[in-house]
Length: 506
Image (cartoon, rainbow, N blue to C red; front, side):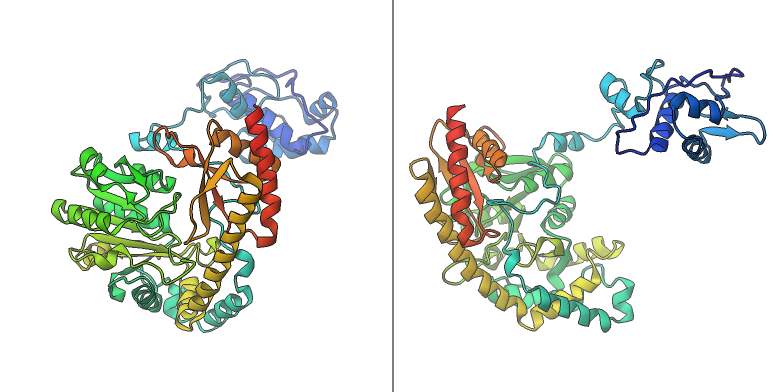
């Protein structure tokens, strides 16, 4: 590499004293950017710290702090009692040789389009990029009517804290060591008991595997079930995370329409009769809220048995049936061992728990156990143990009963508020399960436009179009009411009415 023996008379840098970034950091970034761009050649001698301080109108200590950091990272070489030079062996990145003074390399790459393309990835990764993920939440507090948010205001925080504290105080060496990769044994036993009683799932604790949530369960099952390019039935409209999991596993999501009776099995047979997997939410479909009819349940099971395909049953929030007992899970009807049942505690307790589970057919227990053998524990062993105690002592069952009553009250309050403020424009579907409701939007209003106007005014609803793989003719909105107190419903729907009117005028 050719090095320079010259001296840089000036660095031609600009520092902004009004910026929140400290001056020494600005100087560090500016010099580093010019070195990486090749504007400061290897071996080039820099002006003295006093000269730089005078040129930039900053304290000498500021310059020394930046130069020390650059030296520590290998960009500069300081010679005792002599001078500071650009490191002679520093590789120069290809690109713009005439950078704007003070402009970071990343900004130049972004504006020029010549750099920053990144490494090449698989086709499945590019498909993931094209799959919508919705607006980023950035940890913001939930607003009315964000879908998927449970009634966090009603969670027994103090009781949970005492349970966790008790488990931590009594933790065994095995628990501290990380535990069984398949999950905490008492928790698996408690889950097997719970789903057998409440959901009609037929299983033993050995069939239960703990996950870090629904998405991990999807990923794990699909990676074991699919070869690259295999077809997977996904509901349309449906949960976006399902099709993203299919793409991540290298599969090909095939959209199957959903109507008032749930997934149209006949359409699935016509579009992809030999699909390897069907990913469905039979008890409470998201986002439409419909239930898969008994006739279609049986047809789906018969198809899976005939083709030796796998069904992933997503049991999202179906425990929250507002009246009567929850419906029997599809897994409870499966005699051929084709259904993997997936559940989560993120909605029934709180999202930050990041704990879920899957129940696999007896014939697949050994395969899933082998897949887990070299894997780390799927989630915090301490929280798994605390949840096992929470279930075994009956706290979870009591919490579910309380939530069913709360969601019934909040759902009714939302329907009443929508009728009062948005009648004639929105037609809500019946709501007898869960914590969200879907409402059709009168033509020619765009659900995407209404969604954006509502967000601008401080109300968060989802557009039905966001859940569709193809172009959807029907326009609609999805409301989450789990995290909204009944007294706050009217404020939200009045704001929504203003958003609808603004969208109509555009």
